[in-house]
Length: 333
Image 1 (tube, rainbow, N blue to C red):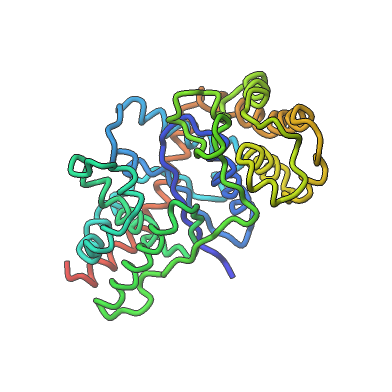
Image 2: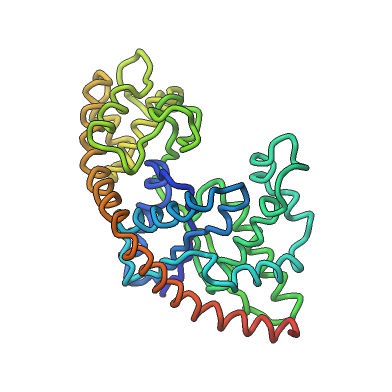
């Protein structure tokens, strides 16, 4: 059975190892499977829920496309486009906002986390962001959506909105209700300086993350300086659970090498961290350095990146325009 897969990535710039292992590596696998029809959207409308510099945003959109292509996503096999180029996303979001309920949005924990204590000063866009996400997915009849832990709740909301629309207008299965695609054997990537904090581009210290544009020397230096504890390498999963920094580094090795945590623990049990770090550095250099070099090369070919977006937008527009016409008819426009 063919899977229709939709996923969006915010053009925040400076994508890092956590983004690669948490999403992009999986996108490449999905793109390479002939059973899948993939749409990868650069969600620039979502990006402006917080204030952006227009020039920086434009560059970040291109950088996201460059990262997709450099990582191995083939634009001739999958649709790559930016959200704002297809007006049906915004229009569908408005229609669905008249279907969604305030109580549903009030339960969204990500808004509470991002808005902080003074949520009265947060933008309306940040609050209603999950409805736009639902529109993104439902417009393309996506059957599956790759999601991390932080987006599971939003996908549940998308399912609720789609189901309510179908029920309200008495049209069964008009909106396809998507299923989540959860990565198996995936370790959440944490900061290299603090195993309890998620790896983030907003961290003040650049040593906390491996950027996808880092050089070989930068990667090696960052792993050498990555925080560990004074004990030798762990010898069991139980021990690993009590040592966050060791768990993070072994998780990175596992995700890059497609090996189980047990295999890595067995290989390095009782050894010094320096031996493990040397192998991890080499693994990272082998995987990330070619991507880094290709990203830098593609960023000098802005017309090529713009053409990918233009071609992708045209393909996305063809699909979305048919769906929005049907929505108009159902609603009564």
